[in-house]
Amino acid sequence: MQRFNLQTIGSAPEKSRPALKALEENFGFLPNVMATMANSPVLLNGFVATFGSFHGGSFDEIEKQVLLLTNAVTIKCPWTVAAHSTFAIEDGIDEGEVQAIRKGRLPANPKYAALSALTKTLIEKKGNVTDADIDAFTAAGYSKAQVLEVVTGVGVSTMAAITTNMAGTPIEERFRAQAWSPLAVAA
Image 1 (cartoon, rainbow, N blue to C red):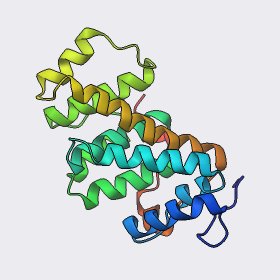
Image 2: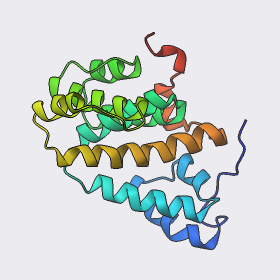
Image 3: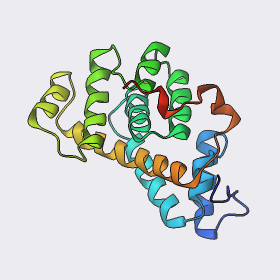
């Protein structure tokens, strides 16, 4: 059940409109999650600022999608799993890697596996990771400072996932081929 209207640039509160215009230019369309967030300029503008910061960081596009898809699966959000599965495939991630993450498993690529594992651990342990968790991440070739970038990615993705789960945001036609259910996660 959809709990919030999907706003357009014309219908959104005035303080949401500049962000919506920028997002529509960036994506080439206005994703439903942002149209939902636009009901609250505080949420939308906070998301956009964090989104921009994360996407301006040191991870490449594939690493960003590994992180964001892992977060979506861990939070059990059908909208963000469908969206990030689509973006991951468009960005060139091997479909087998995408399917592994969608099933709650680690990717085969050791570097992506370390990123996915840390992301999942941060969420599941609510930030209470061990030195061994961080050491496994840095042993894969990441810097210790990038742990904090993972936190940023978890934050931006969590805003989207919680919003869409809570609001009942519908999945756009563009993402429906990657529809997903929490039942798909390996036990």
